[in-house]
Figure 1: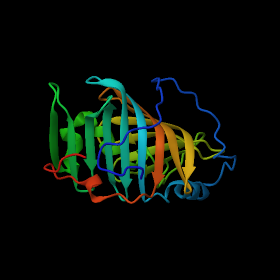
Figure 2: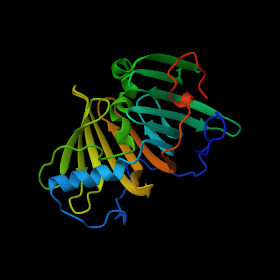
Figure 3: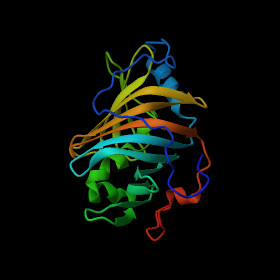
Length: 255
C-alpha cells in the first residue's frame, strides 16, 4: 500500500461528488459476450472478483443522512473471508479529523465515532450484535464485500434484466442485477432478514490484476434515510495488510 506509517491516509485525488447525479457510460471492460447460459454467466462473474483475497482503496465520499452530511475522505480495507474496515475522516489543513472508524471481522467489531458534543466514542463486541446495536452503521455490516466486489458467488437467475441471488459473508441475501449482453453488474438489493432493504448501484469499473472493481458506488439505506456515494481515488488488489488494520481491541488507539 502507499501508506508508510500508521497515520490516516491522505487522498491525493480530489473529486467533487454531486449526490444523485450520475449517468452510466459504456465501459470497454465489458464487451458484448451475452446473453449466456446460467452456468457460463456465473463463471464469468466469479472470475471477475475471485482474484481479490485482500483490497485497499482510498475514496471520496458524499454522505447524506439524518445525523450528518458532507463530503469526506475514506480508507477501505477488505480481507477474505469477511473482514472489512472503513475509516471516514475530514481532511483539515494541518491534520485530519476522524468521523467514524468501523472494523468488522467474522467474530468481533470495533466502532469509534465522533460524539455529538465532540470527542470520540468507542464500542466493541461480537460481530453478530453490531447491526442491532448500531443501526445507523448497519449497512456496512450487511454489505461487506458487496461494497467493492459486486457479483461474487451468485446463485440464481430471473428473466429480462438478469438477476441472481447469493448470500454475503454477513449472512444477508443479495440480488445482483447485471446487463445480459455484457454481464456488467449495475446494482444490488440486500436483505438482512428483517424489513430493512439496502440498495446499491455500481458504475465506472476498472480492472487491476484481473479483478473488476467499481469506481463509483451508491448506497441507499431506506430505513435510516442515508445515502452514500463513493468515488474511487486509489486501489490496490491483494496488498499485505498488517495486523493493526483489523484489530478490534477497544484499548488499542486508532492509527
